[in-house]
Each structure stands twice: as structure tokens, then as C-alpha cells.
Length: 121
Image (cartoon, rainbow, N blue to C red; front, side, top):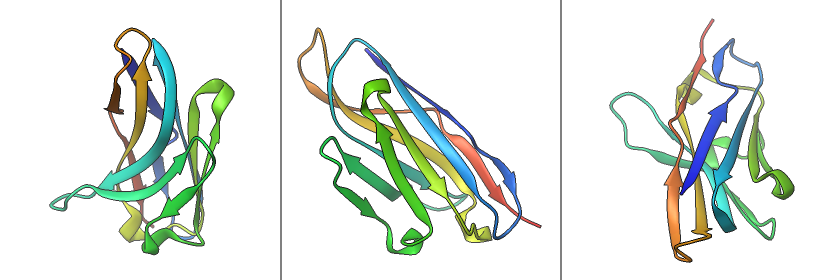
């Protein structure tokens, strides 16, 4: 089983910055990619940024140039540095990982519990 634990959310003023972290733990054989998604009230969950184990990244157009995704593969941790935050970035941010379990040896997608980000003055 793989568990994802997010941290780093909170309340920030427009133009401010936050850094989200997500650590994967459990019986992990390998992780092929990790990412961040967000869901605002009344809206569908949307991709924010993803990164492969090889370091390839993909961002939503709305966050390009403001957000940066990175990983510490040794710690099975993914980060999301968010700069120049806007009120429309307010949402619950979810971490996910495509991972192979050590005992199942099958690829699955795992999700964290979510962390709230609120951008408001």
C-alpha cells in the first residue's frame, strides 16, 4: 500500500507564495510520476502540474511561469512552488502518484487527502 501526505497549504495574500510538499510512503517498488491537481468549489478537479521520474514536466496554462513542480526522488517527495498567487488559485490541492507496489507489482494511481490553499486579501 502507498500513502501520500500533503503539507504546506494555507492562507496567503494575492501576489504571495506557498510551497506544497507531498511525501509518498509505504511498500513502494517504484514511482513513475507524481503530480498536483486542484479542485475549487463547484468545479471539476483539474491538473496543475505533473512530473515524470525522468524529470519531464507539464503544467496547466493558467499556472505556467508562476508554479514550479520538482521532486526529491530519494525521499519520494514532490513539491509545488507557487508564486504570484491569485484568488483564482484558491482550491483544495491534491497530490497524486503513479506507483508500483512492492507486493502487488502492479501500477496504480494513488491520491493524497488534499490541502487547502486560499488566496485572499
